[in-house]
Amino acid sequence: TEFGLASLNPDHPKNNKDYEYRGNIHSYFNYKILREAKSRLSKYAQRNADLIKMIDEVKGKVKSWILNQWAQNNTFTMWSNQGQGLRNKKQLALVNAMLLS
Image (cartoon, rainbow, N blue to C red):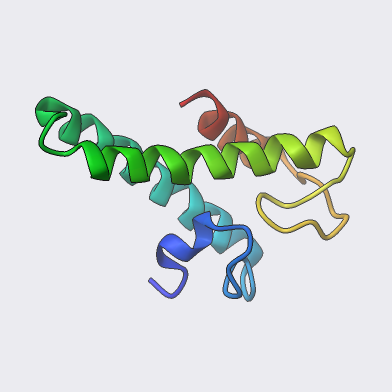
């Protein structure tokens, strides 16, 4: 997609640029894809150690960024800090799913 894995990177120029909610959904599914990929790669952990490490780094950066925004009392719509806050329970559920995985 246009957003692709870029939607997981808070500093990427295409991140949430055009369609905020669409970007959130893409971010969530990309995150789920990474989670599933790590699960499958873990079956051969020694052989796939570099890929597993890369996935953990991406997920860690996303989680760290969200927690940092909350620590600063910033509101944001998933990845962009635009002062709009999480507008509904679905968006909050997406964030929670990512923080817990």
